[in-house]
Picture 1 (cartoon, rainbow, N blue to C red):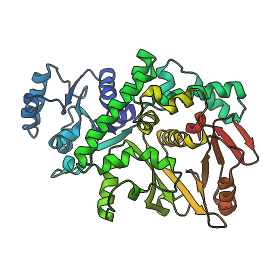
Picture 2 (picture 1 turned 90 degrees about the vertical axis):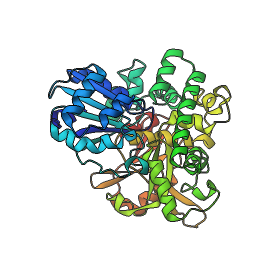
Picture 3 (picture 1 turned 120 degrees about the horizontal axis):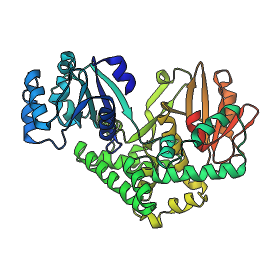
Picture 4 (picture 1 turned 135 degrees about the vertical axis):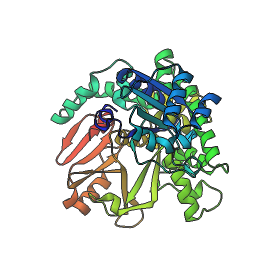
Length: 434
């Protein structure tokens, strides 16, 4: 955000997009308080009649700015003030006007929004090109550690990772306990705040349920037939099958045609509540050029929400994942929780998600590389294990098949950092360092 302010100098508006309740409004206002002499924040989800009347005059910049200052009792200073359009998707006219407001040059503009590309939110308007876009994700693991008062652990992990230095079993167990708390609470600010205030995971679970209910309401507005909602709520069940793709035909009652399915997936992706991993047909550094966008896996954008979604029919006190994670007894059949947290941590670190599958020699099963990273002119395969880490048949077969393309090979698992020949065993809590 600071880089945008310094480099843009008012020539573009900053658009912060992200899932509902991820903290977009809060961070926009906090930035405005710190970096400007004054600001006006317009929440289009809760705007009064005076605001909507002002929007009708948005083409007359002098009149529009004057009205806003009277409505909000705030004086704006040229090049020293910012106007925040919160929930901009609720007011397409204001978003279209950004082109001219920015050209006017008097003030900076920040937009926040979710579901920004849904048809009804862009119908009959021209999307401004004068936007610098940032995507906001749930709090990553480092931010979570900061929230609970720990500013040291993640930086120390970075130093250890660079040296490929063993942590020892006792430290590794402690750091895995810390990570499991993050997996249960998640990175949604409200859930983290509830944990800090109550230290009670049942209360945290209730907060996450409220967020998931909000998501479901949004999905039903997007698609009243409930198909998008079903696809989202089925993510844990789909991952538990350990299939090579998300099997949409097992979720929806009737088979959708390609165009309808493409629209549903676009709407789900636009909600920013999920992370897509697409199949790389020919794993190479240019993976987007060799991607099958019809073959994909879905992960919940926040693992804390994933845990609640996976056991929606049980309360937190009965939730087996809560019990197993806290006691470090997560069985192999619940290993998909680790797969979701690895996906979340990779995305938070700026990576797109790709995976690769191919049949075994006898054709009875598939090998699978859970994630592929592009680093320089090489690709780095990742296999995620919650247990049974001594075997890594898929990584070995991948090495044999694509040896000239491979850089580092990673096995992400809940044990200590170590290296064996060209394979690096990485504790789950170090995923963001890959």
